[in-house]
Amino acid sequence: MSLVPFFLVIITVMFAIGGTPPPMAQAQSFTIKARVSNMSSLDHKLRQKLLTQISKTRVLDLDHGIINPHLPSGLFYVNAHIGTPPLSINLALDTFFPLTWVQSVDCQDCFSVSYPLSNFDPKKSTTFQPLPPNNSIICSPPIAHPSAAGSTCAYEAGYSRGIFGIDKFYLSPPSTGAAANLIAFGCGTRSFVDFDVGWDFNPIGGMLGLGKGHSSSIITQLGSDRFSYCLPGRSLSHPGQPTLDFGSDADASLHASATNNIQTTQIFFDEFNYLNMTTITLNGEIVYTMPETGAGAKLVFLDTGEPSTWLVEEPYFSLQDAVVRYFADKYGWKEPRPSFDPEKGGIAFDLCYDIPANLSSVVFPTVAMQFLGGASLELQDVFEIFPEFHAMCMVIREGAPNVVGVFQQMGYRFLFDLAQSKLSFAPNMC
Image (cartoon, rainbow, N blue to C red; front, top):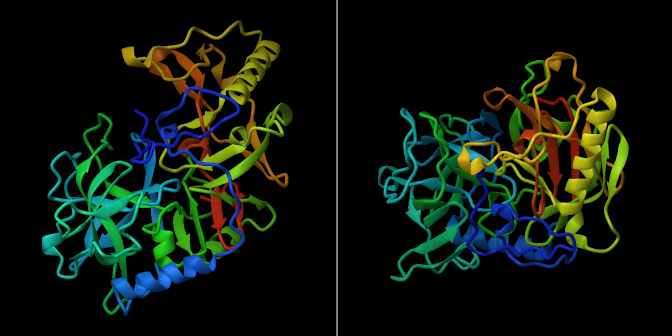
């Protein structure tokens, strides 16, 4: 199951290079305009107006959150504390979409949240308030609008539908006297996702939107130009902590132990934050160079709400051909086995081989993306073993747009500096 938002506003990226769109590609039509060079005066005015409309005593600060894996769903989450008294709710990280939401006890179509965790009950929080429908900052298209009755602010986007509310919000357990942020977030009455994906335990009760496509984004509400995160890898030997950090803490978390390994590239922005990919390499050899024309082929999104990595058609098949040649030259392997049919219980990957008898001695090639300015991101865990199918597969998929998913980000720390339009990253950080 692909856990990519079914967006209210359909994204149809105009790609020069085609491909079969994953669910995420059913997105909003847009053209590439200009990068964000700093926090615009408009952003500043929106922030100030939002503060006036929500609370005159609002504190814009969040402690760091500890990131935890929920690998059955392919997502990672942080533990948030919402309301008074604070309720502990795990929120999956979503760097692509801006909406933060929790599933409400009033949910009519909803997923199960495992005990001792529970859905959010606005009636039990003494500090909860519905967001007024005349709040023109948050209650605005394309995500939100005044409800039909005109008494609340309704939203319908991503995985969730419901109303916006305002309440205290922490990413660390609140202590006595600690200042709280009053954050506007969605209280979901309908959910369009099942985080347990067939497992009996689901700790996730909503999503934390870190994108900047709407003023409801927690990044915009905090007035923060910077955030960083590190998704814990499968090795336990990494020195850093798997945290989500904001502001100056985001800088410190990256530079603490990676001074000599940091790479940087430009962030561009239209409806979403994206990178400009230049080449793809296998073991350091270029297997595909992005064309000068066709901007859509160069777009790459870092998406913690999507488990898989996707490439549009031409770079995908160029990489696939290079991998086939590598295994043929190095090990004499014949053509890959036929594709599985995921609808019949198979694997949703195109390039698979039978598990060889000498698996322990197989050296898998490294796959990397290069970006504008020369930064190179080596993708993690590109090849996976599926014992139940006696198969090993390349877990990059063909589809549009280009996305670096959760599994290929693990172990890196990424710093989004939106004020400077820069993404910095370093390996082996958590």
